[in-house]
Image (cartoon, rainbow, N blue to C red; front, side, top):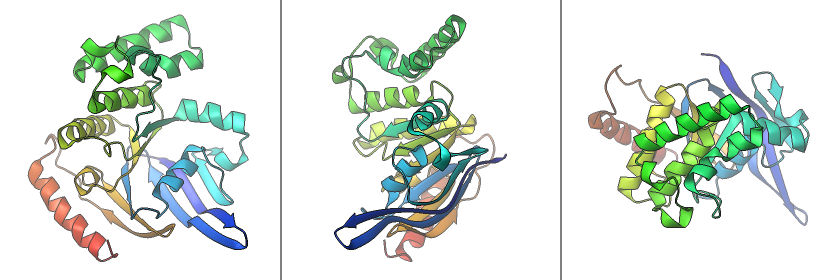
Length: 260
């Protein structure tokens, strides 16, 4: 595995009159290919702000964000838009599906924006239909977002984010609006995607969601306040509940030491 993301001395400032605040303050972070990194911290700690900087949605004031050989800070807004569409999948808490498009059209949208060749669109269509069958969305592909449950909308949003096979998937509280059963379905999908090679960075407040990742990065007041690495699961074992329970205990101890 190679290094996918490198963040050095990243800082984002806001000024109100003469008062300056740093929502992201001198953050250093490295993420390798195929990693599943979870970012945790109290409300207002800078988690979502960091995610938006990594996505190129917001500009930063100091530091470096590098994706392999691509320097995000040196790109124009247009170049960042194209780079994000081709290399970064985004999943938000509120789904952000386009209400006037069907489920299928929403998922297919990134492919259409790329202007891919006919055979590439055909391959994407086959992949979408296959994934929708696996995720219980096959009967809903012609429906509009308002006709779906929250869990169904989030599954559609995740498929839209990964349809172009981006190098990195950024998820901001993807289970925050879901009940426990829906959240479990979404996290199982992310688990499978990661096992197939998808690199994931996920922001959450939920302990049960966080333990599905491999590494916890804790943020406090815009700074990284510690990291926790979980041991790898044994090959061939599908999400053993006893391991997650052990991880929950380990994570709670880690968080309490940091004032959670």
